[in-house]
Length: 368
Ligand SMILES: Nc1ncnc2c1ncn2[C@@H]1O[C@H](COP(=O)(O)OP(=O)(O)O)[C@@H](O)[C@H]1O
Ligand SMILES: CC(=O)OP(=O)(O)O
Ligand SMILES: [Mg+2]
Image 1 (cartoon, rainbow, N blue to C red):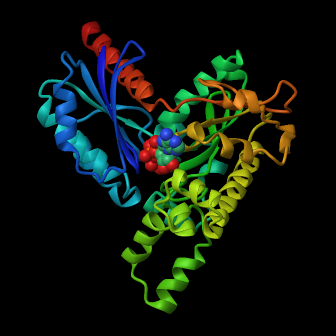
Image 2: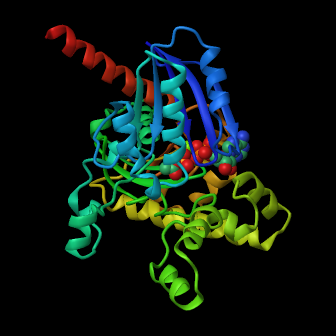
């Protein structure tokens, strides 16, 4: 099955064509503004015989797996726009566009949240009044699930162990960033929450802060809800700390030139990541490996090494393995816990889930 995959991330739009688990073509638009219907139509038009299209949708609410899209489902997904403002509007708009430009081709939504659908109650529940939880559906959803599904499966291959036997802390470090504890292939805790704003600091997002801070700014300094929303989502994280765009390349370059704000930004970033990795480890019965994936993890060898300089959990990164290529173990043979680097391939997971859904439906139809 030949699948067009569409992955609107917070900093980039990634398009690909995947067939039989292999990428046939790809196009990445970096620093993407959000309006790319034209690019998508051109890319789709350049690739003949598409059997399906798959769109990454970060927030699927309580949905546990992919779904074929139509206007009714799109309307349901639009309800999550305020909870994922950097992603959901773009996914919905691109999916709608695809339904228009690819008539007759099934368009499937695959959700970041689905990977975390079975989070244990103790990890999914916020310590908030019962009424808020029951009335407004407030719980931890977790994100980056498509990336995590691929990274965990691939890490198990690299480690030569069945996924069911592995305790992994999986860090997706891209423009968005999250840390997830995966026990036997199941997400058992994750740093992102009700929205993709919680957790570690990101390119432009604050990550977790004291909830008293927005209350203070609104009450004492007259900030509006939308001002706070914009600042926390667009002008915080590495961007807010360093005064750059938040692209890790700029921050690392500024630090190399002695910029103190960039140094602080990376100190905070690394400190908070280490804290989150340690927190995730205690949700596992045993920690076998830390898995790194996402644009930042893949391209920043220096930062990968920096994360583990404290040798916590006995982890030691091997400089030669760290500098090599491909999906691989980057820790030393004697490291207390392995560190595995896996290229982020949300495109392969989008195609895989879409193929499984469509094949299952065909089986159902022919069995009737
Ligand atoms: N070639 C590269 N070299 C260094 N850093 C890179 C490179 N490509 C991407 N990155 C970093 O990865 C980040 C984007 O990660 P990615 O996972 O592609 O983003 P998104 O969250 O938009 O999917 C960028 O902010 C950039 O800092
Ligand atoms: C959920 C999320 O933050 O995704 P991304 O890293 O692609 O922006
Ligand atoms: Mg991404």
